[in-house]
Image 1 (tube, helix red, strand yellow):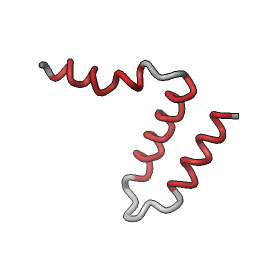
Image 2 (image 1 turned 45 degrees about the horizontal axis):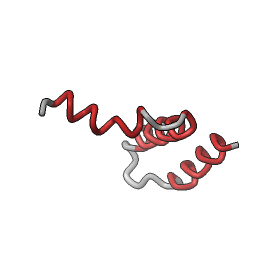
Image 3 (image 1 turned 90 degrees about the vertical axis):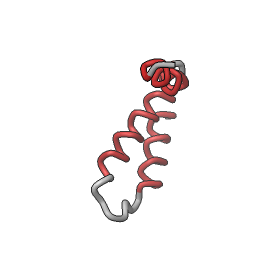
Image 4 (image 1 turned 135 degrees about the vertical axis):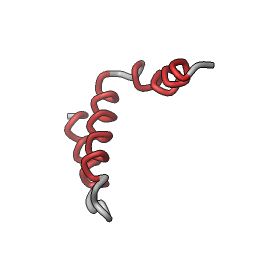
Length: 57
């Protein structure tokens, strides 16, 4: 199994997910990347909940 195959296997649930789910995943990943530099990323759960509510509505 090559590295490309393994990456595709990992990303498959994301690529086959409905548009709403993909939007949530992409925005949450970006939020996590933005907060990586923080020693204690406060309020991330609230931010994730806000993202989910925005996409679902």
